[in-house]
Length: 123
Image 1 (spheres, rainbow, N blue to C red):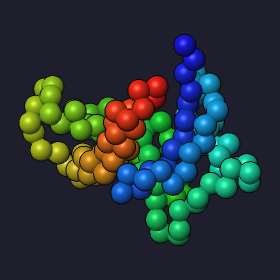
Image 2 (image 1 turned 90 degrees about the vertical axis):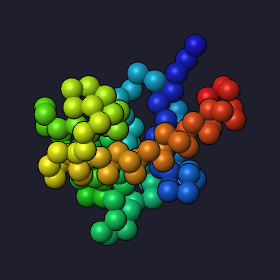
Image 3 (image 1 turned 180 degrees about the horizontal axis):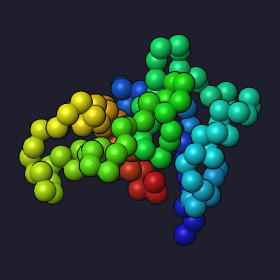
Image 4 (image 1 turned 60 degrees about the horizontal axis):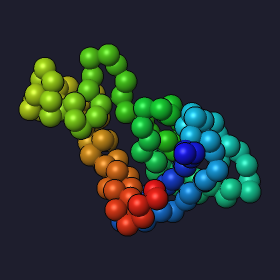
């Protein structure tokens, strides 16, 4: 069974606004993004000045792309706030609050793919 790495941009209405398909599943996410950004043929929708795509920690912060705050003691995913040593605790400090809100907003991509997978079993 073959897997694919797919780069998608999804808006808050759960609509796909960009999709780049065709990369082997073993390809890291960053080369796929870099290719999308540099190849004119892909017509990547760059964010407007002052706007950002929320990206996960596989991507660096850069113009138009906002990743979570990374530090060994700072939680960055919603499940980390619901389990573990600090179970049920609210975010501690500005960095965790930022990450909590960042992850909450990025949850739309998870919901979108959940709907897609429920509709199309092959996904």
